[in-house]
Image (cartoon, rainbow, N blue to C red; front, side):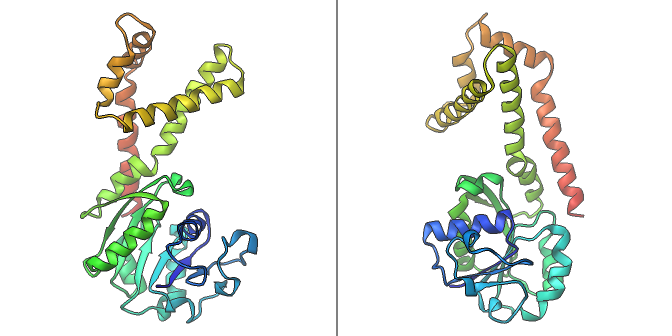
Length: 266
């Protein structure tokens, strides 16, 4: 099986690194098409002869094509590669806001898998939500999911429109976590910790809390109750959060992200 990665930015490099690290495919089985020449130190061991800056037939001898270009560059790319495509190509897209229908029309192929990864894919801890056109058979979908899972975990969904919600939750989600972490770091510094101490305190608190939650069957609310004793320090903070409607504001923000994702896809 040969795989072509088209676009070698963050996601293109993430997939290349994950494929090579996992041993899912060999170094000679991955081809790269990128606007600019890729330096050997950034090729993750992929054969230099498999890296191209212009479309050519060799690239499209691949079985699976991964489209990892910016959404605004898609139409130009489609016009450049359409002549090289055939009905058996399976296209995996990581482009936000480009629908399956649009890709089918612009590329002239029917086998499309559309995905929404998030940034922790860069370290193999990502979450990807994906869906597929009816033309993709079960075997092809299984192979694509295995490719995706080299970057972390994945969820398959039947309804393409749910990718907008996935964008708002898991796609944008890491930024929400970083936002809350930064607020805690600034609070720690204000309370007297050094910047490095504050960063260490907060990062370990988040990491430990997530691992604890993942290893138990308790709900988040149950864990909150275990930490928050009546009349104690945690309850004092939670009371302020409640008064300021923090939870409601988070939900409202996520709904705004979902609405914007819908706008991008129309």
